[in-house]
Length: 444
Ligand code: NDP
Image (cartoon, rainbow, N blue to C red):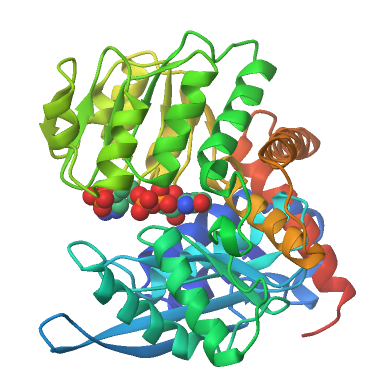
């Protein structure tokens, strides 16, 4: 049995109840076969794959808080510190009722390779809770965030582990968590990223993931003889990543015509009105029905459906496994020629394979959405220097990081004779740097 198959079997046996984690490991290890096969003896002796698929540590803790009725509620908190071979653990905190250990492990595992791809010194980690921020008052959100950080603060620090936002964790939640960390630890340090501008946040962090997605997509199209300008784009999600992806796509002359949330989706043939979308989602924290009510050209549909709209480029920006094989078939039948993942693992393995086999340019999330964590690392640099860079400075660094990521993965794919397979290219390029550091640091 090959080394990859041997480790895949062990990982399946040890993590049988974690389908998302198994899916992520399956994708990464299978696409790494050319590198592993070329170094099988050394990697097997050093147990590289066993070590890279087992987190350094996984923390799980009780988060008690009091709701507005005086009732005590209890949630479960997580932080998975996966691999710090190239820098302090770095990765967001997801607040969503679907969160469990397997989801945090899949996200932490992906984060190792994503962070490596940015070429910045950051290791992989992820955290969160099954707390549902929807419908909670500001006071309830604060009570939860303070309780969550009361426990988490024992394990993180500016040079140890630096969490950030993710689904359900935006500027408000980061602010409450930062305040609690500061109070308990008595330290004002860059322990979280995605902070407000008045207390150490970076300009362009809010926009970074969505903007970065478009910088990478534009470069991928350019290198394949195509131009993003004038193209019709379908986007899923209506949160941080989706909003700024839509905004940057418009700035590049493309036309995004859809967005979605967990209850329904919008088709707006005139192009999405970003100012209105921000008002509905960022200010009122309301449903997309409010967007449709205020915009005569928009059609609102219940449920799922953005992938049925005819487009040139598709950008899944909501959540994992939101684009399945049927969606992939519909996209191909409608002439879509590029898919770039704004969310983490939004495309199922089967759908990814179908898209690639049908000639669709496919940029995986660990490359395409790395702009968020890259800009978080730039926030860490500014915090260490006690400086704030201008929006233009951060944005231009972000753009060159995304362009570099694309060329690194393109080059890695060509080097291993899988040219055009950007999934393999991203995994290989991310893996090589981490393994080099692991080997240099000995058995630890
Ligand atoms: P937000 O919470 O800001 O937005 C998430 C959006 O996706 C919302 O519109 C939400 O709808 C929708 N959504 C979430 N869960 C589901 C679901 N189960 N079914 C359908 N729709 C859903 O999160 P972000 O925009 O920050 O994150 C989106 C994705 O991008 C995630 O995969 C995240 O891990 C990834 N990502 C985020 C980065 C960042 O910097 N924020 C960086 C890199 C990756 P509703 O409001 O109704 O729940």
